[in-house]
Every structure is written in structure tokens, then in C-alpha cells.
Length: 345
Image (cartoon, rainbow, N blue to C red; front, side, top):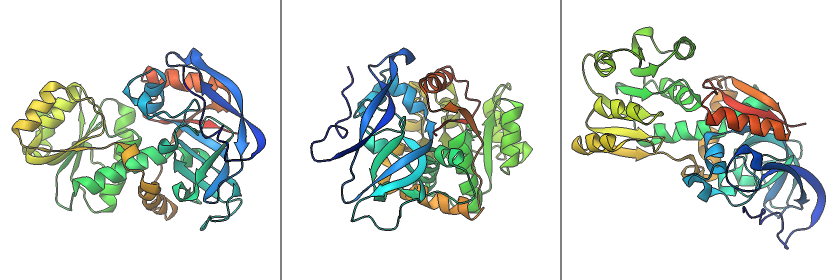
């Protein structure tokens, strides 16, 4: 049985009102979700209370729910790790924000105080101002993808002139990463795609047709190499895992950087990377939150119209059926590369 939110029952806080939340009673199927009520708590001096306006679903959500290794990150029964909302209350030590500000955040380090709820309470330094030129749904979709992409960019230390292969680039992380690379004048980017919709997205982001390789083709590995003049790549980024991770490893040069965002590489992947003396860079958003500094950088670029936020799929309003549907779509891999979002009243 999943324990109730320890923050919600903390004796050091004062109850001020009630909110609705969707909780997970136990690990397993979507039938373990139920609608419940929780106390909204008075803020500590460095905290703010926020009314959630939109929350996004992340693959880690269904991995937690089904009891996979990610469940160890859960601190309580309310799930959800990214949102956008409005500040409704604040403590005396809060600076840089005011009541009514529109903000967003990744809350994965506060997993017991999740976003499948009407309100959330967080330390103010976890918050980032929402870009003024996007709505709450788009803002809610940004945190994890933006943080992961920015962390990948920072840690691979790519520079103009470097050759990069991105495996599975049409999803949220891949789109932000491509935008950030191009913004930093790193333009020799080759990507994999599996359908026309993905191809169209990648062309829109600025990837030339000749650099978009259909992974269904015969001799896929050679075609990826051909797109780089039959040379291996300085950096590869794996956003897929499995057999495709092996492809990414095969096209990496000796002593190159292998950016792993999936933790789903095979034994052969590890053997290839070892033989190439590759630098393996493991990216986990919850390890790179750091007061959402990465998110703040990307948000500023969005606010200045330097990069765009990928479109989202609004699954429904804040209700039990929406959460169940979103988890079923994620588990069956039917998101079509779009972040799933729930709107709150």
C-alpha cells in the first residue's frame, strides 16, 4: 500500500481548506487510481501555494504506477511531476514572486506533493515564471523535456562543427534539444524518424531532409553514417533504447560521447561503447532539477521567441477518467510524440 503524503499530514502546518486530488492506492493497473480529498496547508516561510491550471503526464508516471524501478522516487500517493499554475499564497521569506504570478515547475523531488491535484505547495526557489507567450497547457508540458534537453546539451559539451546523431528526435526532449543545438550554432544534426508526421516535425525544426533517416530502411546504420560523409559521430543521443540504442552506439566514434536518456540500452550496446572507450553520459531529469535552473534558461528562450514549445495533446479536464486515459496512452505507446496534458479548472 502506498503511504499518504507525509507533507499533507505534517503537524508543523496549519490546515486552511480542502482540495481534491487523484491518488494511487497501490502499484498496478489504472484501476488503482481514485479521487480523494486532502488538506491544503498553510505555507512555510519559504513556500508558496499554487492553484494548478494544467499538469502534464510523463512516461515516468506510468512506470511509477505500474511498480517499476521508478516507484522508488515516489514519496506519497499523489502522482505527477510537472505543472503550470498561479500563486495563491506565499510565506514571508519568498522573494521574486507575488500573488497571481503564473509559474511552472518540475516537482519530481517533491513526489509526495504531486500535480494530479487542485493545489500544490512548493519552496519558491523551485518555481520558474511562465513564458508570457504560451498558455498553461504548453507551459505544463515543458519542465521535464526542457530540463532533460538542457542537461544533455550542457554535459555533452558540443560545439559548432561537431557532428551529432539523435535517436528518436521527434518527441519532446528531442525537439527541445534540436532547438537548443541550433540556437548554439551546432547545426550538423542527423536524426532518425519512423513516419511522415515525425519527418514533418523534424523539417519544421530545421533538420534538412537528407539528414532525416527512416529507421525502417535496410542498411539503416550505413545510411546514418552516409549522412555524415560515411564518418562516425562526435556525439550520439539515445532517446529510444533497445535495438536502436545499438545503432546509436555503432555510429559513435572512438572516445565519443554517448548521451543515454533511456536506461534501456542492451548488453550489446554496453559492449560496443566499452570497446570504443566512449564517455557514457547518463541523463535523469530528477538529478538535474537543481531549483529548475535549466528550465529557467529554456523558458527565457521561449519567452523571447528564440525557440518554440512542441504542441501537446490535451487529454481532458481534471478528473479520474483523464488520468486513467493518459496512463493507458503512455503505456501502449500511443502518444504520437506529443506530451499529454490535463487541464484544471
